[in-house]
Length: 342
Image (cartoon, rainbow, N blue to C red; front, top):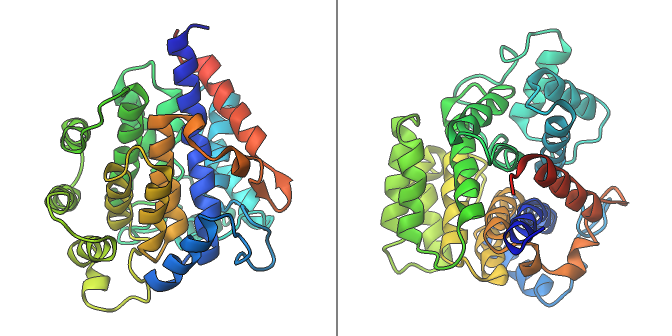
C-alpha cells in the first residue's frame, strides 16, 4: 500500500472514529444549556469524565454511532445499501432495547414497521424534520467514493427516507455526505468559503428552498465576528422557527436538521485543524450536542485522519461496556479495502 492509500485509510478511520468520539463525549450533556456544557467541556478537556452519570460509563456511544455502525455493516454484507435489511436491523435494535437515546422520528418509523406498515411508508411524516438521518449517513460516502458522486446522493436520500419523509432530512443527509466526500480528497490548505462552494455546487440542484436559505445564513455567519454562543443563537434564531418563537426547551441547537447541519459545518469550518476547538464549538453551544459533536468531529476526522484524534480515548469507546473502538476501525478498514481503488 502506497503513501496515498495509507493516508486515505487513515481518513476512513478518522471519519467513523470522530463520529463515535463526538457522540460519546457529547451524550452526558445532551439537552443541557451553554453554561452547563461549557463547565463540562472545561473538565473533559483536562481528562475529567466524572460527570457521566449512571447507568453508563464514559464514552458510551448512542444511536448516532449505533445506527452508523448498522449502516456500515449493511453495506459490507450486501455490497450495496439494502434498505429493507437496514430497516429490519433498526427495528430489531429498538425493540430489543439496544438503542441508546433514540430519536422520536426513528422510534415512530420502527413502531410503524413493527405494525407491518411497508418500508418508506412507515417513515415519520413530513414536518418531523429531525437530524436522525444526517448523523448516521457517514458510511455512504466511504462506500461510494470510487463511483459517480451521484450514487452518494441517491443512497444518502434512500437511507434517509427509511425513517424520515421530510425532504429537509434528506437534504441534510446529502449535505453531510458530500461534505465528507470532499474532505476525504482534500489535503492541505482548507478554505471555508471554497469548501461551502464545493458542497453547494453538488447539492443545489436537488435541495429545497428552505435548505438553500440555510446555506445563505451559514455564509453570512462565517463573515461575522461572533463569539461561540452568539453564533449558535444566530443559526437557531434564523433557521429554527420554534427557537425564534421561544417555543422549544432546546438551548441552543435543537435536533432540527437544518440548524444541526449548519452548526456542525460551522464548528468544523472555523477550526479545521484543531480537535479541541471543534469539540468546544460543537458542545458548548448547548442543546443536541451529542449529534453536533458527532457530525463535527466526523468532518474533522475525515479531513485530518485518525492520527489527529486522541488515541487514549478511542479505546474507551463502548456500548454498554462492550468495547467498540477497535471494531469501528475494523469496519472502516473493511470498507476501504472493498471500495477504495488504489
